[in-house]
Structures are given as C-alpha cells and as structure tokens.
Image (cartoon, rainbow, N blue to C red; front, side, top):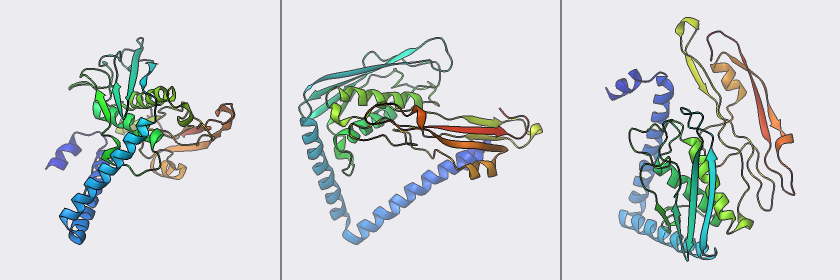
Length: 296
C-alpha cells in the first residue's frame, strides 16, 4: 500500500522507486553482513572491536589537528541567487577555529533561509565539512566516527545551511559544494601545502517531456563531472568533482537507448584546465540533439 501511495504521487515513479529500492537493498546488505560477523565472532567481540577502532581513529585525528597552528580561519562566497528571487545574491561564510586538538566550525554571517530550493539541510552541511577536513588531514586512513568527534559545530537554525520545515531544499547541492569549497579555502590559510585549489561546481542539464500527446513522458537529469582543482604537488583529476556522489557521466549508449536524444559529442576541454606548475582538471563538452517534439 505504501509503495502505491509513493508511486501515485510521483511524476516519474520508476526513477523514485528505483532509488528507494537501491537504498533499501544496501541497508539490507549491511545488516546481513553485520549479522554474519556477530555470528562468526560473537556480539561482544564485534562491538568491542568497533569501539577500539573508533577510539583509535579519534586519537589519530586529534594528533593530526594538533599539528595545525591554532587560530581562526575564515572564507566567504556570494551565491548568485536562489532560483526564485533571481536579482538577489546571498552570502555563505565559514569560520574554522583550531583549538589544540579540536576544530570548531561556525557559519556566522551566512544568509538566512532562502525562498528558493537551494537551502541545504544541516546534516548535509555537516557531512561536506567533515569530508573536506578528513580529505586534508588523513585522506588515506579508514574513516569512521572517530574522525569526526573532534569536529564541533555551532549552527543555529534558520540559515540557508540549517533550514527548518517547510523550507524548500530540492537543489541543496549548490550550497553543499560551496560549503565544501569554503572549508577547503579556510584550511588553506592554515596548511596551504595540503589543500587543493578550487574546482568545478554542480553541472547537470535536465531534459524532459511532460505531455503524453507529444510522446512518452520522460525526464533525464544528466549530471557530469568536469575538472577539479589542482593539488599542491600534482595536477588535478579530470571528470571528478568533490562532494557530489551520484552516478555522473552517463554513458552515451545508455542515454541514446533510453531517451529520444542523440549525443553528438562528449569529450575533454583541455584548454580550460588552467595554467600553473600544476594544472586544474579539464572541462568537458557534451552536445545533445533532440529527436522528437515536446521536449524541454
């Protein structure tokens, strides 16, 4: 019955149901493997091992933070608009206070919640800040809760990075990527030899048809990764972007098989990679030809 309610209230139920079933399958797989470990080694051994790993990681993370000079490191960015009020830019500010073996994160001065759907739920903002810090101080070490215990947040409700219901949040990715970039930029003031340069942000054309009189309705949200920022000691990766996961760079064959579209070019734009001793990642071009009527 619940599946029926969800399906009936969604414009493209196959996409939504597929996403939800994938998440459920992943959770079930995790639960099954955890049960297997408990059966093989015993519940007490497994839980003690978890605690030991987390505590050990926390000690290592605190040691890494302790190597960063104490101080307050800040960064700021203006976002063009929120998609609804298109003539008003708004700010996002981040402050990282390094105090011995802890990092205190705040967003004082950041815009209040916006009318458009760019508001990013606080749990997402916490995640991208943690990812940025983890990626700088211990990128090659296994990750668990211990990495994040020394990172303290002071985020009041009601900001664009801490919206409350019923604020719209559908396009939260733009602000998430901005928060990641700002965190990296702030840390670069303390440890510049370990931080990457700024990279590409979210790029995702959406091609759709709604009226069945023109043909089968569909929606293609086609995110693709482009160039990342250069590293302190190496060129940047291409067709990789920080923060956003998803399944970008859809194969041309899959798109053409499923939708009335033809992708006539998909390649690298090395001329926009950026200059310097170490180069940024290349951009991409992707040319679509629409083959049927009624498509936006």
